[in-house]
Length: 527
Image 1 (tube, helix red, strand yellow):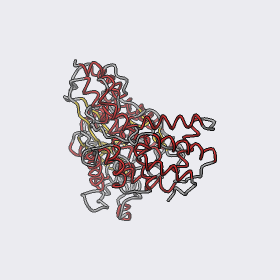
Image 2: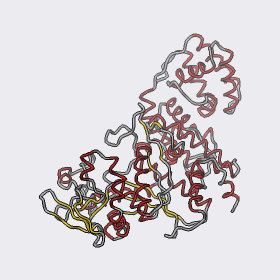
Image 3: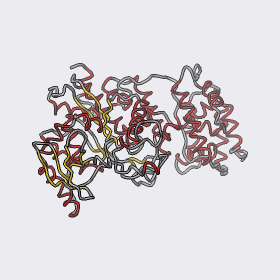
């Protein structure tokens, strides 16, 4: 075992804790299939969303951690349940009348309403792959339709047929009385309508591998359970997939805890071993309500990436996956700054500290290095004080503060400037409200201006911050935080803000003095 692997054995990072459970489960043995299988699931009735990203990202981090602990080969399957029958027409697709005529059919047998692929399922699968490829995930795409139709699931489906009574006895206690009378794990695909049918099974022939069901028109139909002629109900389907593919690890949302329990029981009945994994918490909106795709009360990946780098979204996903988190626009600046701080601290850390650092996991052990970091919040405040959403204006100040830094030599910082401009324009600028200074505050600002004027033109952020503190402690403020709040509200038009010493150093002594003096004179700083 190398040094990194030895330290990973004691790392507190949650991906390593998960990976250690997998290594215990495998006991150093290569699974019969020849590799350790990590899986994520995707329902392609809708487009990929922020939950899809979170599940694939988190599973990838566990897989990367596992690869540090074990020499066993591994794969990640991004599995698409594209054989499911479409229940309703999504609101965000064109040609809805056409799609409505195909309700009940597998997604891969519905014409593509976008007109770009052979089916609606193929369209959404392509969107999923493009989505995952954008973030550089290492995965293999697997289609339920392909697995059912190609015979890959045939042996497992025959096993479900053999264990039919045991399987339904797991599910029946969870159903209502009426549903219990008609429940079957097998959903035949009608050869005439093409629909996935929820019908009761009248007869079973294990030797022939067939079932008999009755259609609504009264006709009795015998159909094989193999070859794509049937698919399975959700919980039985999940269990069968674990069994057929030999899934070793799969995480899922907290809302699926009961489904995991039932599917695990069925998987054992079939003769398989349920995968390891954990249940992650769901996202909440600003009011603390569960985020719903249909309600649109959340934040999309595309919206996040307009205002912040993808790594900041990864950072948000990495933190406390078993704790419910609010996902709305106001969380973005903090997540960006926490990511930047973690990235900036990485070079000075020893190996053990690095393994506990989120950026090790986000960047698969090789985070980028750049010295010219500035906080996202300070960039937002710079844009606000300059009253500008022009990157060139912000870079004018940045280049004085960080000599040698420019968009070419500091690409991370340059991307942050772009994101900050977008965020400032859409969120900060409309909400900025400046207030006038009180007499006591005006006196404190006068003292602050005098102190800054007496300091060297190149005084650093720490020296400036010390003087800001000293003024606040000398003046008539009940608490020091009241002084800082006054600075934010009077000079920046916000109730919160950056370290003022850092801001003054970035903005420049002369510009900072001019800003403070305008506030002392009672001028309108909003223009």
